[in-house]
Length: 508
Ligand code: BES
Ligand code: ZN
Ligand code: ZN
View 1 (cartoon, rainbow, N blue to C red):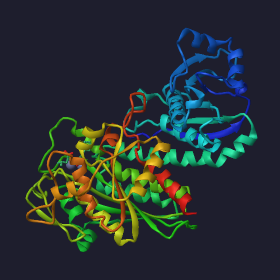
View 2 (view 1 turned 135 degrees about the vertical axis):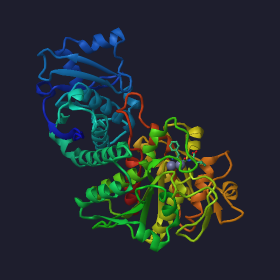
View 3 (view 1 turned 180 degrees about the vertical axis):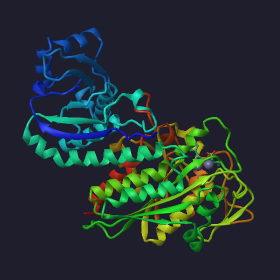
View 4 (view 1 turned 60 degrees about the vertical axis):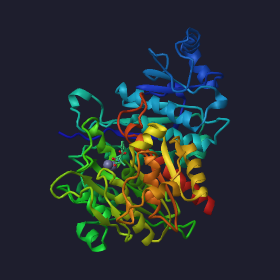
């Protein structure tokens, strides 16, 4: 039995916090200073905050929490103090994380209503930025993937309503747009998380294509076309076709197109995301341990889908394509084999030496297609190599590119989004390794620097355009911190959306 995920509603209001009725009131607290409203709350609650801090029970370290019951002293039933650390250090990532903890706790407590009382004036941020990350954090922390849990076990409400409390109507007015932006981004990121979290028996390439169509149908400026096996064959997209040929469910290329009504630039931008709904490794079968995690091998594609949903709703003034090649990598009598030589859409041939290095083959075709559609800047996102996780750990994306300006833009967006990226090389040293004696390229290099070799392989299909590659193998599978909701974190949605917002501002 499948149940609907909990609905998350977030609104804002200018009200007196002490008389605000809710199951929970979450209050942001600095470790080194106090806002007047927090002081007032402390006084009303018989100096409980002083006591908590003196005892060392709650020192207001970033994202630390203390829960108390108001026992009628204020209108909210419970109060959750949430640490923000030192005021001078408090940035967008501190606020987002703290609000996320507040929202997560509210859901853990099965609250139906929760107030969020956080400082809007910070030395390192504009008010609007605070409002945006506040919304993002609430959506992030309130999310649970529980479609297949039984209701009698979760006992959760169908809906949670958060209210961001503004102390004055003026600030609320100044922040309203940014507040809504955060809601759009947070909700799109949660859509990405749900699709990534869904099991591979439920989401296969066909179901994924149907889901993409359904999601785009409600947004007029966003279209969704599906290239099926017949069309892929006619176009000779040998990369996508080969990877998908071993599965009972045929592969597809999902083509999203967003046409803005107002444009800041004539350039067309392409986002390409790997969507392997399950990566068994194929004939080069993976070992069994942790194999179930390979349902997350669609995370890059889902990040691209989420980003296009967000960008279209935000009315980002740029023309965008989102290309999502999707397949299931399975061993069978019809699978592609090590030793096969395939012809990609670009015309370049590839000697298959390992069927588990499948992502780059699908991406190669989609990157070529993006250029044919007129994209001059292309960013691909993929859970591409285990080697990337070995190199830089579980939380960061490897960033490889042929353009240093593009690298700087992406780093800047990552700083604001809190989704960290780290540069890796993918130059001639690695391109050399990918040359084959019997084809233009082979699909694996040596075991040294395998993330870089994969990037170098992709670079060969992006010659003549600005291109960047994000290897999200780590954060795609293991992105959630200990205290985050379990499963996909939707890595890349905020990052790519901010990147688009950033370049649209630069182009204006
Ligand atoms: N989907 C995997 C990479 C992966 C590993 C993603 C762990 C997330 C977590 C990819 O298709 C793969 O299998 N890559 C191989 C490449 C190798 C054969 C060159 C790998 O990393 O072992
Ligand atoms: Zn894979
Ligand atoms: Zn693989």
